[in-house]
Amino acid sequence: ALGERIRLARKRRKIDANVAAARTGVSRTTYSRVEAGSPTVAMGVYFRALAILHLESDLDKVAQDDRLGRELQDLELKRGSS
Image (cartoon, rainbow, N blue to C red; front, side):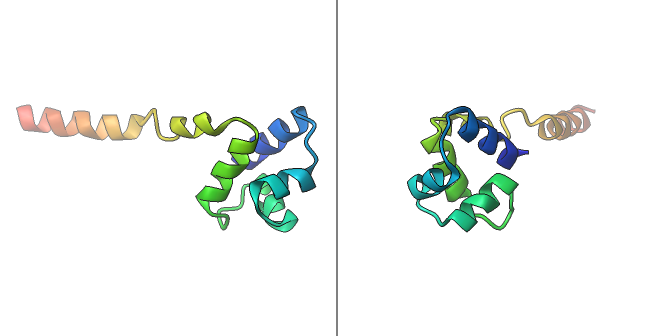
């Protein structure tokens, strides 16, 4: 889903994929893998792809709403208070 959102953001800005790849500092092939959401691409490349689209602050939202972690923490707190 991330790759698709990056692709759509690039297209909305009317940035050619070759230009986006060059600005991101990767080959066109690697940039294609970014837009495909490949897990083999380094997180830094995703960050740079977001940065050229002025979306780098969106990375701060990753794992922001950790529902599972909070539920596990609540269960632990309940066990500790019993």
